[in-house]
Amino acid sequence: MMYVLGLSRGLSYYLDVQRKASWDKDARQFDPVDLSRATAFIVGVGGIGSEAARLCHAFGMTVIGVDGRWERDPASYAERHAPDELDALLPSADFVIVTTPHTPQTEGMWNRGLFELMKSSGYFINIGRGMTTRIDDLAEAVEGGTIAGCGLDVYEIEPLPTKSYGRWRMRSLPRISQCRTPRTFRNGCMTYWWKTRSGCRGARDSSTWWIRPSVTSRAVPPDLLIRRRPTYR
Image 1 (cartoon, helix red, strand yellow):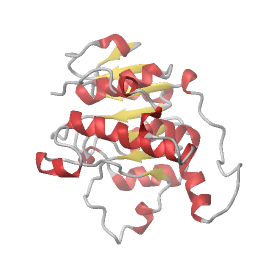
Image 2 (cartoon, one colour):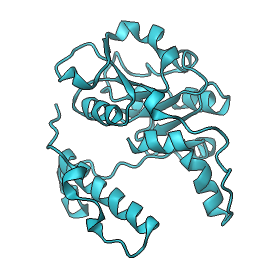
Image 3 (tube, helix red, strand yellow):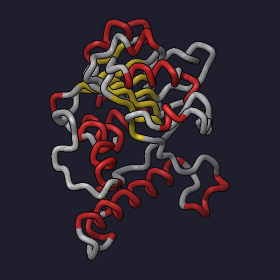
Image 4 (spheres, one colour):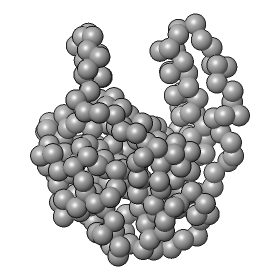
């Protein structure tokens, strides 16, 4: 959800002027996206996709799910569709959120052809597997104005090679994932659920500090951060 919020408000533009120590209230070069009128496409409605759908729905977004199997509670979804309907649906998506696994069928499925079906004001977010997305095709789509931007938690090649300078400079929100294995418990999390709790606490602490340095971590009631323990397949 942080990707959706950051992209919809043009966070990357403000980060640019912040690095330059410049005060520019008009740094964002487009009108913000009204999420209450926006449509989010969740491609892959497993545990992660369902949680993303719940959060998007909470912000008033119209949520449309695309998956070959529907094993999760569809309460957050306004519509449910099969993968073979994706091409017809993409032109109406404001945010495409991909959570699909890497399989022979999904490898490279997000390529130039699909990006060209999206609206020019649409955003692409991948929080699934990097191999599902052709990074060069995505970069061309963003840089050429085919789509408005992207948020990537994963890449086709990890780590992204240093020589791919243009990809590092692409107008997007960068990878923000923290821990991947149980061994990273000492760094703040042991399971995906714990990672989610830790991430929410970190976001809460950072945001309250930027609002007022004296605000403590108890500024946001804990019960509002995690309402239930999500399950993942």
